[in-house]
Length: 569
View 1 (cartoon, rainbow, N blue to C red):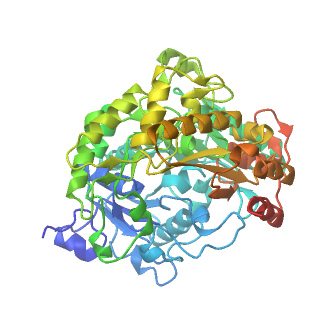
View 2: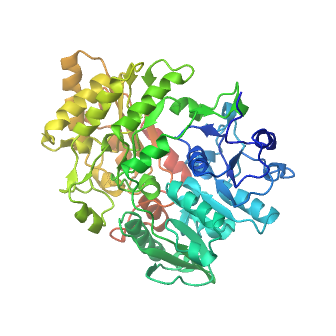
View 3: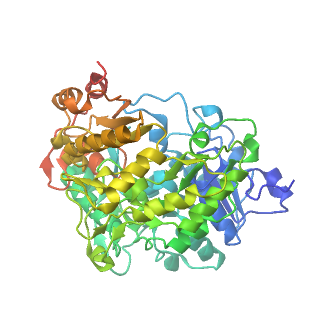
């Protein structure tokens, strides 16, 4: 048997005939060679560029640190990712209680990664090998790239570059950034030259040359919640801009510099990533062990990236971007065909989707207007008139996947935005009714899950979500279609409690809303303030960063918990 091409041990490196890896990537997750996991994508992309990449999954940080030494020193640099989730969200509930399991660890065991995983791993590597560069990336690093509110310590923390001592931060989706950094080190590029690379962050003694936006300092944000809110508005604006500006934030006597991102990936670039030779299996080292997160996604296909919905509590746009980057139909069809090679595949795709499943191939009709736009959302407070929200390309893609030999069903497990096909007067265009019927009859396994998030418009306004009246229209349309088609399907709404602006009065109104009668309320999630969201800025500062007006915030853990449990009384 050929050795697996991404080694995780020295023995596996030896079997490949390597004396040294070019890049050694440390990850807080178990290593799964599936494109839903960032470590696998980065490893495969770098491998495709000719680099030797080794991955050390879930190293032991509490012993003699042998896991950090076993692969030796890389030729170019160490890379560090906390995994598919921020380690603090992974470890703790919204009530700050320690979770008893970890879906990204074999057998779901907890305790296989530290709190603040990226910082811990990076510090260990810098202490062991002070002269070897460390690049941090992934969700945890990306969303903590500038001053951010940390719910678990209940304070503002500086950029993760400060505490981690890392040399570089790759934020957002990292394929091009990590390739550029690898090429830079391989070609002997100077530090000064590397500081001009797109989509990187770094800590400097000096302000960079050229144009930049001077944010309030970390210390100013700590003294004044208004300064923190103002900073966030700029950070979010530049994250959503096609032509962004370098951001500079002073911290002590250093300057955190965040360069503008790369342009959105083209369809051809995205197709190249998903055409790489992923086995879609856990690394052979886990043979016989169950990894819960893998069970959820092993038969899924990602159709596109990004989200222009702009929900205030969501981090997707901050990491993947606002602009939709779609794969070609042929690329998706090819991946669907390859599922037949996987063990235990019975013809059912568990999720043919993305962060928002029904945004495939959507975007502005006039790209010139998009280039000038600074809106956080293309849907809130009202749909942008420039937005092409036609669902026909999406339905054509569904049809093509459905014709693949061996595919019986392609379910949509990820979320949909019903305000993309419904308005106050009903369906928005000619594709809307066809899409909803297609979704319900052919891509729902009996339960259509949607997330109105709340029933009270004052809370929904602060969430950046449409009025609950739109959900009421959705329920009417759902009932009409299922009755006409003779289907006994369920509509399952999800809600959030404890969000800024939400009191027990709003939760009482939610629980008594007549439009929910007869529906199964399966999940009410207690709001968790995660770094780099509008809602976390509200939670910390007590201000709506858009208006700078005061907002009610329920900070007491017990009262937050009562909000969540109230609905189930």
